[in-house]
Length: 423
Ligand code: GDP
Ligand code: IMO
Ligand code: MG
Image (cartoon, rainbow, N blue to C red; front, side):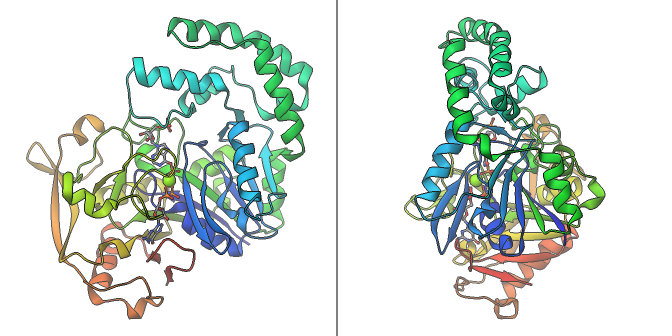
């Protein structure tokens, strides 16, 4: 009987997949509302270990509808691959639906993204074609899933757009595509996916009107928002809660709960400013060697993540632009062995403390102000009740709550669904 939106509060990879999978037990529908297969959402539950890219993390709950919605750019080949992988692990994917208004991410978007990273301004994208698919949406040259339902119309759209696409590819020294090969792909995708395509506005609003429990699952995090994040080192969509309503076509006033997911420290992949970043061996302490599911390597690209201490001005900024009603803090257990834990509680810019989030230009220059907290030196991974946590963990949580002004409702103490403390 409620609408919940769940988003990342940092630079992505905060543990959204785990929290969505946990919350899905109460949901009738889970909706991905932006991004594409640049996402890597890790889920560890009784069905196995999964790294989801396009499929909403609610797919594991029997009977829960999973919708890849309008704000997304979807590579159909990747979606088919992912659906076949998860169904081979005994997950029923019959309830997975796709918005007719979602953009089809094409092979040429991937080619253009790779060329852009090589020859343009490199920002360390996932090279999945995301920015170029959104650019086509904006210049109204994208194909959408609805076009797969009318292949004659689809063919005329392809004939109109391929000239411009190939001219751009040629100019940048890339591989070109024939109209025929793109059309053949569309025919194949239509055959495989047409039965999953739905009219999304009524699909979502009917569920809201029926008082179903719906969870909107964000991708990435606040600092990578195209308007409000560390431009230009951002993604090409808005990973903020309001965009769930904007892109799905329901009134913002229908949102009951906004959950911000954060890590107990900070991580990022790709370029851009990162005030509390650690170097060398210090960062390796958080990273692990890649053998465990929760080691700090990108769930999408496998790149070693950049790591640093918790940056509270970032969480406060994320809470401000999203309106968090609750916070989930993941990976508290990764701080279990530290004698002392540093937390950034402010920034100085040109020697003066500031009370706003600067843009990239100045964020590169800020000097973090740290508070040092006493570590708890206790294994938290088996703890399931807040009362049983060491006082030092409670102090850490309380610092977050006081600084940000939002209650911490969930604390992650391990990668699996049940490794969670609910308050
Ligand atoms: P997402 O993109 O926000 O879904 O996050 P990712 O899956 O990319 O990265 C989060 C990583 O942290 C994954 O490896 C998860 O298995 C892991 N993880 C999530 N919550 C916890 C937690 O509370 N403790 C530990 N140790 N690992 C966690
Ligand atoms: P989840 O949903 C972390 C980063 C890329 C790059 C920038 C733009 O798992 O949190 P893009 O391919 O979107 O054009 O790249 O955004 N990035 C992510 N970083 N987690 C993600 O997703 C990411 N998706 C994109 O590294 O810096
Ligand atoms: Mg991720």
